[in-house]
Amino acid sequence: MPASINCILVDDEPVALDIMENHLSKIEGIHVLERCSNATEAFNIISKENVHLIFLDINMPGISGISFAKSINKNLQIIFVTAYREYAIDGFDLHAADYLLKPVSFDRLLDAINNYRKNHSEKEITKIAEKEAEFIFVKIDRQMVKIDFEELLYIESYADYLKIHLLTDTKITRETISAIEEKLPKSKFLRTHRSFIVSITKIESYTNEQVILRQKSIPISRSFKEQVLEKLAEFY
Image (cartoon, rainbow, N blue to C red; front, top):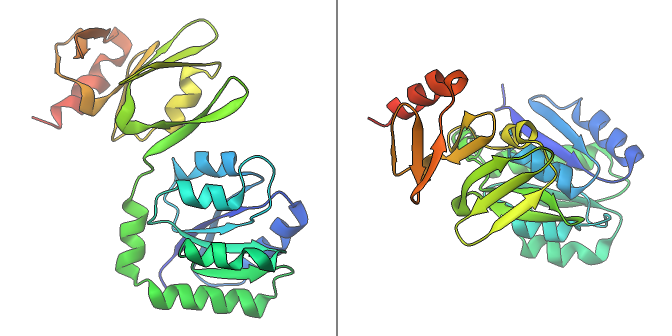
């Protein structure tokens, strides 16, 4: 049995998504995790899921497929699926696994999958799955802004907005703390209070009641205390 490949489909055309999903459903070992209509949705998925392969349109509103491909983890493989032959050089400059022209036939897609499998052993695919995203995008002042996890200290919730405290500045977004918590890897971030999420690697010290990050005291509430202390105990 071939190694399972987790993939997402990114295209702003529903018909194109339908065709690709139908073709892929006939190929053993292919698991379509999500259909995304734009790059922003795709960013959110790869920040939470173990994605091996991305089928990516190029000409999309907002963030183009080329810009998206340049900004993601280089361990994630891309197969471009587009109606535009002229972008092929750009695609292969980004080390794309393949470049498919619409309308995509089943035979051509199967060939692309087989080539991908030849170039990626089961061990390599597993290693890719274990890689975590290094950033998320959040909506700030009508644009999607990249937040690198290495820059993120802690997140603070107010009535209807969040303050995202970075090493060098602070960003404000209308997103809820529960929604952003879902996008953050649990190995790197920890909810200590209904109003606070902290970066585990930025914690300098802690007690049963608080964690300290850059001389800032962040409370540990009673309802989160058990899971916080249990998580931090892993680093003894």
